[in-house]
Image (cartoon, rainbow, N blue to C red; front, top):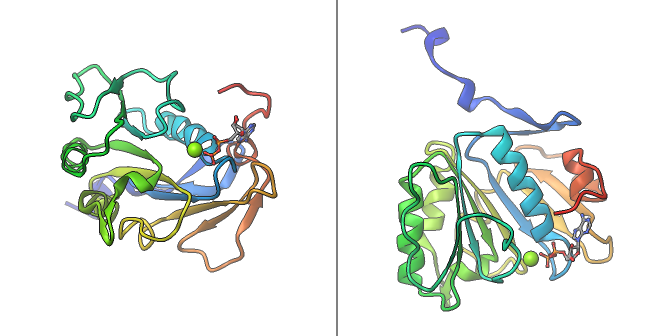
Length: 215
Ligand SMILES: Nc1ncnc2c1ncn2[C@@H]1O[C@H](COP(=O)(O)OP(=O)(O)O)[C@@H](O)[C@H]1O
Ligand SMILES: [Mg+2]
């Protein structure tokens, strides 16, 4: 088999959108979204996820939503502290809203996701994966490390940059750092670039969407 026979399409970078070809993404990339409460992280994460679902039509979406409200309009909601049932063949989205965060259940869920690529994994608050002092999710670390090989993309919002799972900090390909004083604006960095962060005034600008769009 020659090199040209290899299917390289999954490894190629593609522009995040038609209007922002500066930002290039690969299946299995890890996104880290730090910022204070109310700064726009979840909104960005949701719009980004929608865009990635369009770019990767065969990927499933798994969401861990510990705020129990931000993903209520999504299909596939599962409310309960037990591990949600496995997705059926025709299901594409699972939103898990546990009230009690049981590390064993969360690890089991993440283990299952790791074995169901291609997928997009959205963790809205990495705090959910911090099980105790210095004890953070090993499965999440595995998924972020293996990300591109699986491929599973991760998108993780966090209010803090301490005590979050190893891998979340060392493995991100993209960082969107939100600042409260610039309402909904953020500084974007690609891990492989050593340039200055690029400032975007909103998720909509970043993704080339209309500002008034409802979500
Ligand atoms: N880009 C945006 N455009 C319009 N409204 C936004 C935008 N980003 C955030 N908001 C609004 O600001 C509030 C807080 O945003 P949210 O994404 O929930 O912040 P966080 O997840 O950081 O707490 C929400 O009411 C949301 O609708
Ligand atoms: Mg949020």
